[in-house]
Length: 321
Image (cartoon, rainbow, N blue to C red):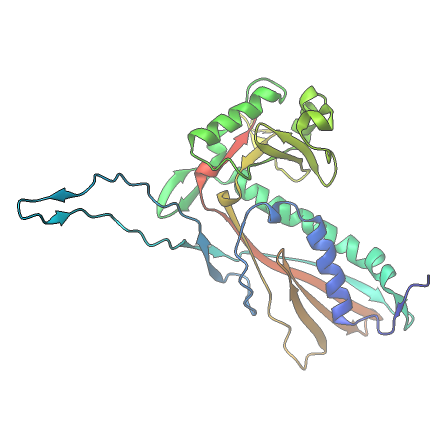
């Protein structure tokens, strides 16, 4: 079956739809953490947005009612307002990939656009976003959560021995249990060294051992001790006494960190540029194109604006054997 050509290769909707699809497909961390899905338009780098921080209600003790000598009944309960707390996240990361499309025939297949331009641009963009989220979770030295200074996640590193093993995962589980982290939806993202250590062990060697028949598909290695386990090439190395980086992995619940993506403003009209912002539940991407007489081609730029910040230190722990 012949592939339908695009009559105008610089149609914003064609490029943006393809970019958004590739970027969303290759993002891992953005879908595993707390998200704020409000879709306002027109943000710029440095803007601050308010996001909802999940909160717990208090369990109270009911002491019953009392009856006085006049048979008057008394007894009160404290009633809470179940509103999510608010916190600010700065949109401090604006990343772009820009390239030139040389003068081309008027008809170009959509498949060619995707393979030759969009994938080489968006896959590195997804890797960068995942790297930034993981760096925020792993390497932050201090954070202000709810108005109180709390220790960094990286200061609670767990692990025993020179190579990652089942005992390290059990230590992570225990630490999150003690911190009263919800058991449902826990994630463990392994760095490349730890992934290599654990793939050779019986826990992950067979899909039925890890409790999943989708082992090694979609980045999911399997399940172990209540975690959905994935591998990532984007986890940064951790510090050591010798001022070198050591392998590390991170265990967390989605409410440990918030990731916010916002659409950028379209380029002003009248400047010879075509600009559109597109977004879905995963990410927002702006497409901008402008013809360059000097370069005899169309300069295309994809950019995205986002911010990430820890919101609950109790819901994340680092593994660093």
